[in-house]
Amino acid sequence: MEGTNPVNKKLTAALSGGAVLVLALSGCSSDDSNEKLDAWAKQVCDAVQPQAKKIEAANAAIQQQTSDNSTPADVQKTDAQAFQDMSDAYKAIGDAVEKAGAPDVDDGAKKQTDAVKELDGIATSYASLKTQVDKLDTKDQAKFADGLKDIATSLDKLGQSGNDALKTLEEGDVGKAMAKQASCKSASASSAATAS
Image: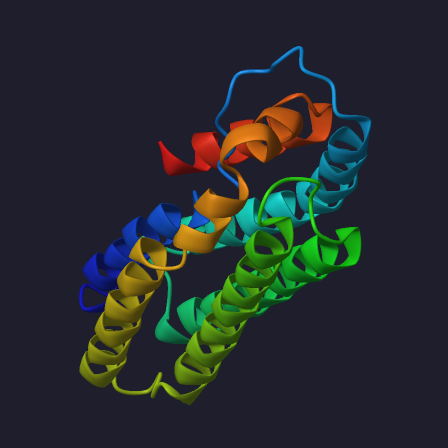
């Protein structure tokens, strides 16, 4: 199965880059207390944690499928399921940010709207990757490997784009409030572990 394996490794590398954007929370905790903002951060972080785990599990499934003895059909099935799970997870994170309302900071409404739009866009991109994987010809090893190559390229672009609104959302006081939440700390630790 030589044709598929190197390409699927590429796919795995591209994937782990994209997974980091699951609210890779940075920020030192601060003593400035803003109860409204803290409550907002807790609501978002609590909703993000299970989704971060789902994304991590989808990444792990794809990584596991990169072993040399995986058939194209196995790779296709695993990748399609993983992309679907990621699409669902990003959509759920977007819904959580939307449901939480605007954070209590300057431009909070704009930051929230941009982040939701971005998360929904990422969800849509993963759904379209799933469709691409589903259409790959598993009977022809070379065609399958070429198809995976295209998907890895799209995935790479997806990993590099799409972070801006989330980074903006997490700047300043919002980031500090999120950094204080236990659920965000564990979400960021798990996405950091996935990236290494």
